[in-house]
Length: 263
Length: 263
Image (cartoon, rainbow over all chains, first blue to last red; front, top):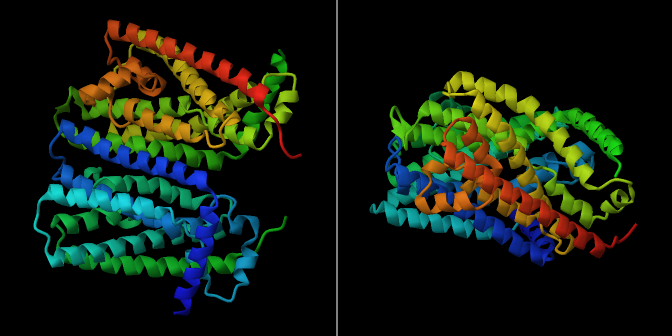
């Protein structure tokens, strides 16, 4: 309860700060629309040439795009801004202002994960839901309760996985403060736009098990399309928990390395 | 006009960028990824056969060259011009006995060198894995030189005049995001122009964006016949002259309007 209240306070402060910049709203809207239009138009161009690529057709790929946009929206809602402020460009670990964060009487990992919010991401979230609903209409399959449940569960797993990977890469900044590790993930995340099965074997393996950005969108989309096996569902859950624990451990280790920075 | 000062500036900037290569390698990595995504998607679509006459090997050749051409023509500096105007840093440059465009050009040259230090070895490595097929002839090589020079000039001046709109509007950099989107859609990134639907193909041939990135690649890989090449060069030259004219117009008007604030 206490933690929820703190999140509420963070959310309020962040949104007040954000709402002060009104022109920014329109510019963000333009960027979101560009992102949506390029995403959908890319699929139109691709599936104008071929009907099916390695078992994926237009509705399936659209479902992937929906999940990708949804994850992107959740990332920019709080995971991204919070972790970027610590480990991103001119982040606290680099400038040494992390000292002040350390002094707060709160669990460090909780604090750095939920501190900054960007409420505009709700617009992206709505657009992503729209894409998912449209994909569902095109898919024309009867949605069962089990499918909706497994989709929701896999989506939660995907968000957790995304968070864990970003946390792990943020933690690496403790060892090498000059390098923008989170940018590497942001770059690689673009690969999650398309089904991981479309990539060559070596890349597929890497995107599934090493830097699991492919897993994050393909698995929930498979749950929606109805091709996800129960075995894969359990494996994904176990993998997510494992990655989360590993990332938490890495962050704790990194925290011990922190030695501030002088001016 | 003092060209010697300009040359010294170019040398200095180059040396300072080399020091920060880690950051620029990361940027180069980020630009490379979307192109790799579409290389893999189209390769998967082509399978063992061809797609619109292109085999996997030819697609690989097209995209690997496009990765290099894109980085050679991408004008990173355009993104900072607006900031310099907004924050008043441009005042200092206006007092120097040379045109402020030298600052942009010196950063351009420094950038190209640093980006190539990263991209050439990486694309070389990728070429070993995915085995592209590129038929080079010396005529194509000769034509490639003016094609890429004009492509760089067009992309640089087009972005520069857009960025200079910061004299009037604070968030003119959004127009640069729009330019990037158009290059993605119509500049041969999403798909080689020949794979686009008819309507988009016509737009690509008429608008300036293809001539900023895909055109030199098409010239080098021999995708165009003599007539198409000639028409391409005429349109490219026309747009480049337009871009330079727009730059001069916006610059002279804007700089008269410019007024520094603060100190």
